[in-house]
Image (cartoon, rainbow, N blue to C red):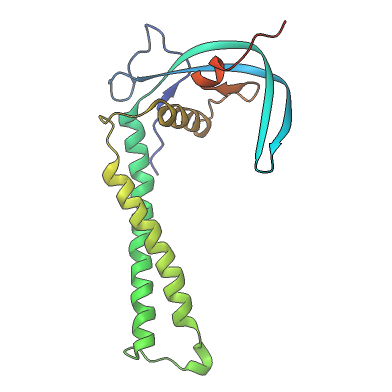
Length: 182
């Protein structure tokens, strides 16, 4: 079983601007960390709640993610999901063949198995199709918006065991919306 490649770095410095695995430059991700002191929620309307949080020790960071190595890690997972989709298609076909009578079963003994096969197979096939579409659209050279990049970065930090549990991770927009407390 191959080990996942580490794709993120918390803070870029002049010494670690490039991925040690593939040698390509990291994609920069600007973010903030801070310790949440308190949080309060206010009901604005029946469907809108406004939450105000107070943070201390908010610090700017410039992290990095290797989108090439990340794409390689994701491809491994997506390939497994595509195989699940292919197996789901086979189950679906078997279910349809049972319904049409091409494959005969004792209805008293195996009643409803065809519906179960079609349901489970169809769901697995759908998962495989979505994985195939994601894999086709995955391109590390493509432009990516800040929120998608930030979300990917924080998610990969967590999966790689690098996410600090003692702080909250904040976007640039969240930091801009903060008001200093006196």
